[in-house]
Amino acid sequence: MNDHAVREIRDPDEKQAIVRMILEALPDWFAVEESREQYIRASRGLRLFAAFEGKEPIGFLCLKKTGNATVELAVMGVLKEYHRKGIGRALFDAAKQAAQQTGYEFMQVKTVKMGLYPDYDDTNRFYISLGFKELEVFPELWDENNPCQIYIMAL
Image 1 (cartoon, rainbow, N blue to C red):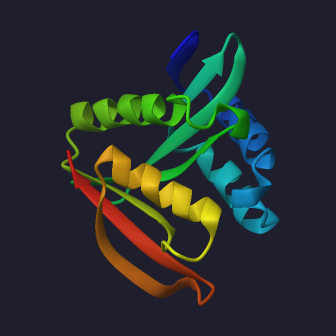
Image 2 (cartoon, rainbow, N blue to C red):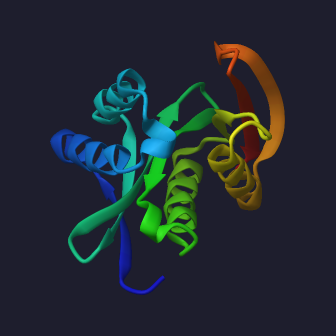
């Protein structure tokens, strides 16, 4: 993965700045300002891993506890020019290792159901390639145009 370093970020202001910078650069996935701002605010209290090229953040992943045994990959983003270069996988590997060390038994992730939007189809294929398995689709959790696919994996 070249000179790309992944590290956990603990400072809430730094977390928020990284998430804002990355999400605002990804309008194909995070165009809805209200949702994007929720992710940015929430990042302050989540466990966050960031990938860097030199000192510049190029991607991040946030984990959120959703149960005694389960953690959620709550949000992640990698700058588009770094897609398909192993950054997302490196972020996931660091987060998965941390989740296992913390004692979680399962990880879940939510995305838009496959077959509706090409960018989200790529996202679904990425999660499947990491080892996530389909759990359930909630057709109206978000809204009727964005049925929520939940994937899960045992840790």
